[in-house]
Amino acid sequence: MTNKDILNNDIIDKIKSTQKNDTKDSKSSRFIELENSVKSLLKIKDWDRALKVLTLWALKLWTSDVHFDTTLDGCIMRFRIDWILLDITNFTKKEYQILIERIKYSSSLKINIDNLPQDWKFSINEWDHKIDIRVSTLPTNYWENVVFRILDSKKAIIDFDSLWFIWKTKEYIEKTIKKNNWLILVTWPTGSWKTTTLYTILSKLNTRDKKLVTLEDPIEYKLEWIIQSEVNEKKWYTYEVWLKALLRQDPDIIMIWEIRDYSTLNIATQASLTWHLVLSTLHTKSAWETIDRIINMWLKPYILSSSVDCIIAQRLVRKICPHCKTEVEPTLEERIIIEWLLWYDKSKKDLKKFKEKIKLYKWKWCNHCNHTGYKWRIWVYEILLLEPKIKELIREWWSSEEIIDLAQKLGMINMRDDWIFKALKWYTTITEILRVL
Image (tube, rainbow, N blue to C red; front, top):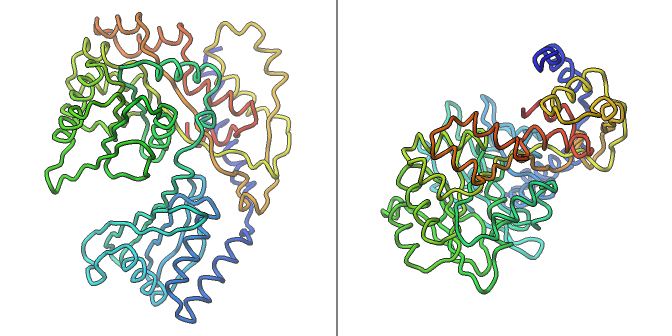
């Protein structure tokens, strides 16, 4: 039996349809309370307070983004909670017009301009710290769409042990960040909280005997005892110009917001070769594909192997609500999925016995998770440590598939490993894994 034999689309579709059938139709009482509060304040024309109440509720519900999506009759307000958009309430044209004016006024945007995109931010002081709200407007065929992202530093910079590294991946990361130089890359698409990982690693490295300097676009969170600088291309403060100046500041550790082109990549690798520890992000789909991406950006393989030490690919999955989860026996389809996820591991002699002991968790729904079954998130990782044997293959232009094959033989934990481990540890569900796989 091959990997393809034990997994087919029918099995995946059946598990996903089970998730849809289990969806609760009832709306969280929290959403109803929020809707009533905001609409009553709009009725009495207390517009500033309506915006503040809306923002505080978004924070209370652990919302990352608030969307005002325009329709023919007004707009739908949606919250992105645990990376899933949920409809909260509808506003009429009149209500939405009032709200958008208050949002623009609060974030110093031009109220009379509605035919051009705008973006800026405003801040509120709650819970003994400042919370930034980054606002973006977009003209549409009806009205202006508005999205604001909530930037709460208390959630962005967390304890290193709370990054959900399992024992092996944590060992890899701790080993690489203790070095005095090299380049560490965090990859995956937008929205996987790469910045949080970088900021958390920076906070772990932030000691008084080191100088840490960042180059960001934009600066999202203020970090204590770290020198932060911001790119401003309108004033010709580009990545290339800023990086050259930054290297003259005698830093020990450098964080570059994003590697976008060869010029940025070249300076980052040169900095790592001149005894600096450099952290940055790159948009790729996996750790091993990062090697291809870097070479396609025209960096020579021998420089790549001499400068890059570790590539971290990460993805966010939703965590089962701890308040309403209950233990269940895995279905036949879930057992087949688990077997597929573990199939490549030929060394597991007791695989059959292992599968018989598998237990999974499911949810019952409650107000804590807003009737979604999930509360907050966890990371899943793929860590590629460029060990000497792997560096040798890169220098000799071996393919990325051959490199990743060697890395797995050397003990690499890939994303599939991390996914299934966290499902079997009852942190998430098989359905959630298939949603993001």
